[in-house]
Image (cartoon, rainbow, N blue to C red; front, side, top):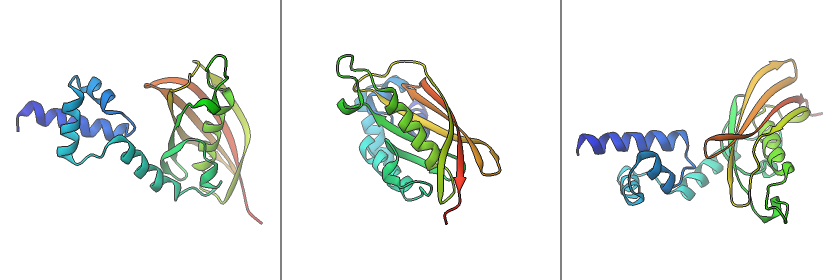
Length: 185
C-alpha cells in the first residue's frame, strides 16, 4: 500500500469516527478524491455505508435513554453518553416545514434540541425548566441537521445543557436548557 493511500484511509477512518453521518459524497469532497475511491476504501476498511452506520448508532443509543421514552426523542439518536453528551440527526421532511416557504418550523428544531437535552439526563424522569434558544439560519426541506447536546453544569437537581445544531458543519440553531431532574414516586 502506498503512503498516500494509507494516509487517505487514516483520514477516512478519523472523519467517519468524528462524523459518522457523512455521505460518501461529503467524504470524497473532504478528502479531495472521487466517490468511487471513498467506496473502495470504505469496503477495504470494513466501514459500512451511511445507512448502516446510522442504524447501528441509533440502536445502541436508544437503549440508554432514561429520562424520557426513546420514542419521544425527535430525530435519529446517533450517540448518547448518559450524564455527559449526545447527538441526533433530523432530516427535514414535508411534515416539518411551512408549506409555502419550505422552511423548517422552529418547533421542529426546538423539539429536536429539547428532546436531546432530556435524553442525555441520567435520571428516571426529567423535564425542561428553562429554555433560551437562538435560530441563526433558516433550514429548508431536505436539509439534515445534527444536534450536539452537552451537560455543562449541575447544581442540585438542575442540569444545564447546551445544544448546538449544525448543517454542513455550520451552526444554525443553539439552545441553553435548564433541565430539572425529578424523582419518580
